[in-house]
Length: 405
Image 1 (cartoon, rainbow, N blue to C red):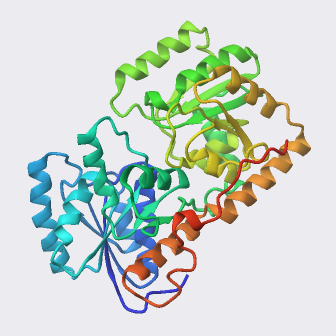
Image 2 (spheres, rainbow, N blue to C red):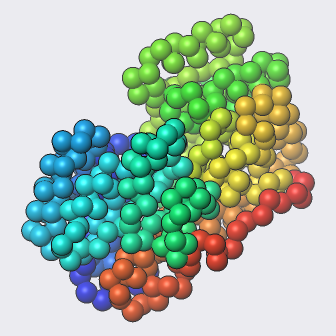
Image 3 (cartoon, one colour):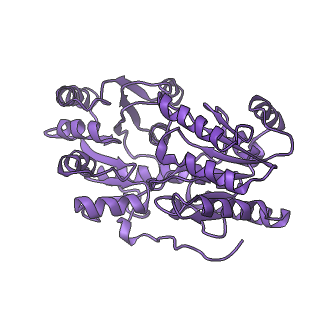
């Protein structure tokens, strides 16, 4: 990756530094800024991952930028403007709507350039909500993490196509690769989760929230009615105790108590994927990107996902996975059955194709390089800022493939 010609100061703003794709991307980009000779500052309300910034040489500043309270948001404007001036910030990069409002106003009458990343197609339930969401479209450059998100920005906020930069999320290939997982890690995880010997594991990673489609998987497991299947749902309820209890009750009502286990969290997702026979993402609402399908493919695992949102851009239909009608448990069950029926040669071919697909399109390094180019473009630097950051409509768009596995 080409370094900056001068040392820029780039401030990213995100509500909190906890688990999640937006937070991971923020940390990854901070590391890339430092590696390229810049100074990386992250402003957030704190979180479990703040300590990671020390290791990569980034600065963290605690501020209640997570708040949607208008009074606090206005106070954040003054605080952010002070930081911009104190650190001589060149670029302010907001990654969420509330902080984007404060940051946009804070950048006015300073030298700092303002940009955003849109991580999701935010729900528009009325004009007030549409206005609130519009802060993410105020950037001089707006990164969309998928064509689906870019189209949302263009359609709902009449955003000039030349402003949008399409940069898919990326994963660390050194971590998400089958050879990186030791047998000991697999044994430990299998023992902790009490997985039955010889079972085919159907895995659904994702926090416990209704739109992730847990009920769809439970219904599909009931329809499959196979003794060799065991499903693992990985995800914290994040305080949603009622939904967690509802899921457990639903599992019992389907007489699947010995066939489905909910695991609160997992600190070793690469090993988890290696335990899986099939990974599923039955989201009922479209995801802006969706890291799980990409991580599963990087680990060579068959993926079955809902046919909408970012999954349509990350899964090669019929080659690296299956895309099924959202909310359709029959379609989900059929696709899982097809994935389970792959013979060893077919499964190996799918794995090779999936791993190559991710390595060519969805790596952390590629995401970082393209983001650095957007920063350079804003600062009018000269090291090829435009080459890989065309307006979203001009970029190659993956078409669904119909070739059977």
